Length: 439
Image 1 (tube, rainbow, N blue to C red):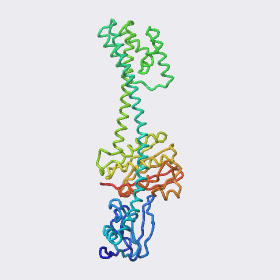
Image 2: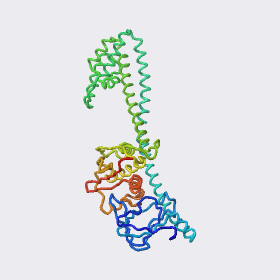
Image 3: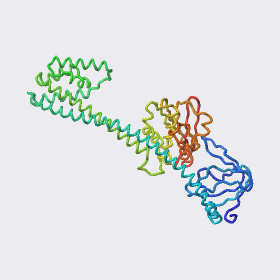
Image 4: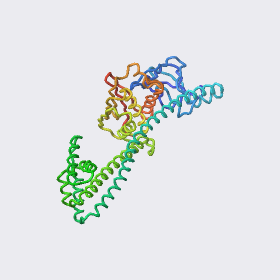
């Protein structure tokens, strides 16, 4: 072992290994002291100090794939220190030669623990995906159903419009009269109608219905709502009668009313299909499936697409925004969307589904800082110290595995070399995420 490793000396304050990076060496303390720290709740927390010769850290790559085994803490010398450093690959080879059953036993235990953790993480991801998919299906179903109703109503209206046009065609009116009727119709469509309350609209419909009844129009209550909705009044109705004559008034008004209904239904159809299109775009932006893994991205877009994806849970939440300077940064936008999802989901739970969520962004000390503040009751001090611990949760059984914020910390700290922390009070909690600028 001594022949394959090396003895190294360090001054106080030197960093030996970093939390989250590949555990490619086994470190054995020969003399001195090494402090082990982890990032928790935005602070650096001392988890242990190695002072006894023979204490060791790292070497996990000897038992697992190098990409899956990382240092569990950051090691920094706090005194003049002598360490023995052995490559993890050599450690695995030597143990395999000396005690193959021991290596097999240790590898089995290590892999089993990792498998259990991975299974739980996968379950949490699937549960979250199922919840989000159900919410998305509900969001799409509403405009899709409205689109179907609008299409069915439009089909009926178009048939009525053609029937009314045929009835108008047999009337003794000239082409010039029809052109004048169409001009009056378009004039009413272009009219800016002030918003009216229900009572004012009812009064307008009554006035139109009364005029139609006095002038011999059949079933005036069928036409009155459509005509009143676009601003028709006695003056306009009188102009139509003058243009086509009393005999053609009934089919002329019916044809005109059906064109108004068709126009309104086309507007509804446009709105609902645009809503579906926006939801699809939000899903594409959220998942980033059509883009490269690491890329330059805009954090604000990820936040907005996450809000769309979580909209079923946010129906009673007031969202306020203060997007300051939000320059493009380099990273993994799909993974950051997972962070926003976890943080916002926890904020909604803290507010019990009702309250205010404030989102703000700014540039601070070379970092893009995003703050998400809820109006909940805050996080107890004993819970705050453990929010990033794997499997720690305050939710009821079946509602969470306690891995959401652990995964978020790994994404922000390990993948993006940023920081994530929480600041809490009885008036609410602020989740603060800091991501380094540049690519």
